[in-house]
Image (cartoon, rainbow, N blue to C red; front, side):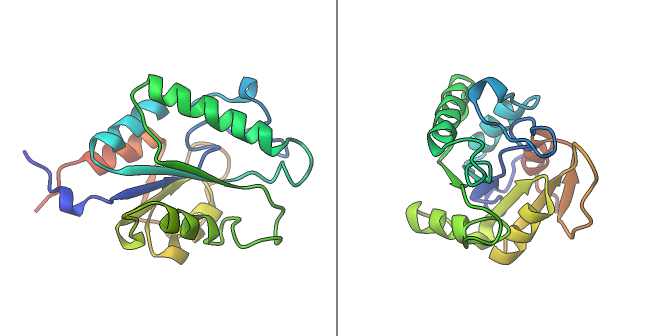
Length: 185
């Protein structure tokens, strides 16, 4: 059965911690590559999104920088290694955007739309109406609402946010499979 690609999103905005990799314990942050651990099938999920022609962009809050728990160089190193590992698994990211600021200090920190707007300015072809945000928090889903994108909430750790979403899944892999289902008439 052929799938109608015109119905697929053109861009998937992914949160990082809790979506691509295991989150740090509450109150802590992923501060180095040695603390980074991909969630099961996350690289494969990104490859599946890529195979559907969906551009994958990571958009992540990294408040640990503002709190002095890590540096922007630490974040850059983690993202460089993450990108290398994903490529080795056949997965490609179009870009990674992160907010290093504290709560209330900027317009880029989710749930604000600043990082998404920056991605739209810098990457050709992003249309928020044809995009989807996949993340594990209420702030991810609120950012998606603000930009007018579809929302998939990953419910994999901790309490489930009470937010309006298009779908709830247990992993990034399940989200990719959901998007890969044939369009039903």
